[in-house]
Amino acid sequence: MSLYQPVRRPPRKRMSEINVVPYIDVMLVLLVIFMITAPLLTQGVKVELPQADARQIDSKQEEPLIVSVDRDGRFFLNIGDKPDSPIEEQKLVSHVMAVLRHRQDNTVYVKGDRKAYYGYIVTVMAMLKQAGVEHVGLVTRMPETEKKK
Image (cartoon, rainbow, N blue to C red; front, top):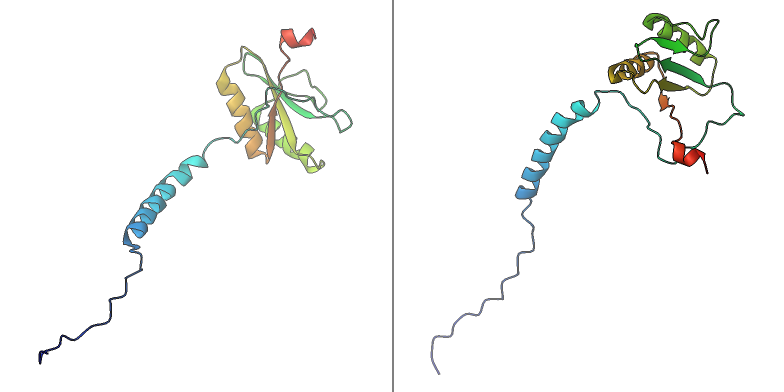
C-alpha cells in the first residue's frame, strides 16, 4: 500500500447558463431598423381597397357620401345644392367635414374617371384624410363578363 493516496474531487457541475450577449446585439440591431423604418410607414394615405368579390353598398343606410373626379381633375360632391357642378378643393374639405359631423358612419367613397390622372385621385384621398375621414372606399364597376351572368 502506498503512503500517497490521491485526493478525489467531486465531479464538476456542468455550466447550464446561456450566453445572452449575442441575443442582445441582435435585438439592438432590430430596434435600430424598426426605429428607422417606422416613420416611413406612416407617410402616405391609408386606403381600404375593395377585394375582387366586392359587395354592394347597403341601400338601407343613409345616402353615401361620394366624391367624383373627372378626367380633367375637377371634383364633385354628390351631396349639396349643385351636385353636377365642380367644387373647389377648400370647399370640398369644409363640406365633407360639415356632412361628417352629422353622421355616425364617416366613410367616403371616391369615384374616379377611368382616364383621370392618378394624381387627382391621390389628391382627393389626401384632402379627405385632412377632413378627418377614417375610411375611404373606391367605387368600381363590375366587369362586362360578370354583368351577363
